[in-house]
Image (tube, rainbow, N blue to C red):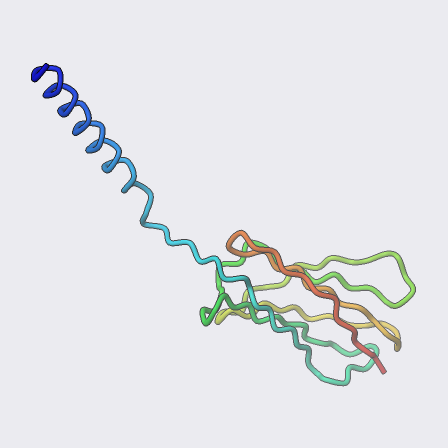
Length: 131
């Protein structure tokens, strides 16, 4: 009985060591489960038709600026039109992604940003009135 108990203790100890050794693998990468915060802006604040406008988003996760977004796009369309244009934004650093866009006609436009970063996706529709 003592030999069986000793063998059982050795096997249990070995399994415990193997389990402990394996569970330490891959822990170099820390997961941040905070959602993205996206701050949309555009310049000039009162855009005019035919002039260039800079559309921007600043992407944060908690207090950290997100410079490693896998995809940032702006979806742009005039009010009442079903055809939407998707345009990729360029990384500017410090968590900022932007593009330059010219609205051809005055009127109300919608811009929806699409940000994919760190296994999160954020999108929100914004309204811009162009003079």
